[in-house]
Image 1 (cartoon, rainbow, N blue to C red):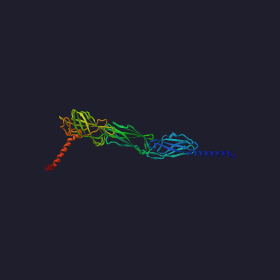
Image 2: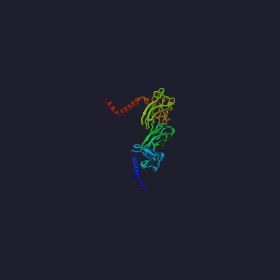
Image 3: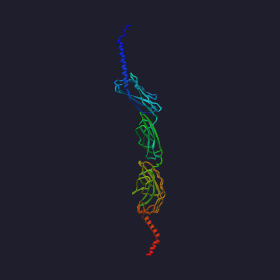
Image 4: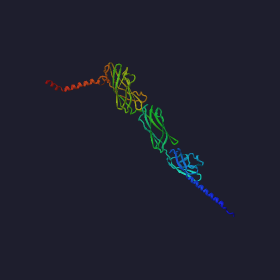
Length: 431
């Protein structure tokens, strides 16, 4: 039998040692590859929503390491681009490599712990667990503020409320209000992001020209997925309970040559201040100077102001008194009170009562007001005097009350003399 040579045996031993050393070195090199970060978009998935998971690895060793078959292992998380990484990729020393997976999340809601796994070329696999949340809760929307009733062609404020109850921010929120016969400002509102657990109110100016439904269409994005929500606000027209309400009292009519002078008081019986208030007369009466338009200005709630307008008219049976004003938003209002003023030979007076207004003459808004009556008066001399036929004209100041004051003084003096008559008679007899 031929003896076995010692040299081949020694070579085999050297080869085995070298192979074992190479395997150990490969294992050592692979052990220096580790996961440095996991980025999930969106941060919280809706059920069946598609997002991305990006896992970054770093090689902190001195040798290149081959990686293959990256995967995400979980029954509720599925990779959409399964064949995107079907080749061996090498990560060099000191380098990083990122795997981006498109994944979809199945219901139910909850927190899942998928496992990232990637094989190395010669030393097993690298594993790393991470978290994915699934939540079907959507954006909460509603109307936070609105008037009890909307007024025709009058601007009111409506606040839309957005609440994000999710554990992650939603982005690219776009609000588009629409409705037939309704003007809304702004016409589109954009919000870049709404954080987790936060809320916001967005104000809109709404001017309705008819009764209809105002719809706020809200679109927003969770990651690369669009979601929508609608808020419907019925627009019902009615009387504004807080609006200014002008009431006319103490109306007096005098004649001054070729024109008439109508004076009185305007009281704001509403709950809102009236701005830029002006009083004048309408057709068939014709306003003339010196007081064709009487500017009252701002009339606060529960306050009053006097006015005087001058006009000419062929028929005093109906003189429209027109009162116009604005609210804080610049909406224009107008109310007309038809005064029934009868004229007789040699005197001028008023009779009957003011009637309901004829509506708005402004660019926007209407108002409806009913005033009280102005009592009939007669016997005014043709050249002047008041409808009360006492004390001169309304605009005469304190001098118009001199006859009243004198009469009062005489009356008091008479009473005093009557009561002291016996004492005075005794004094006279003594003298």
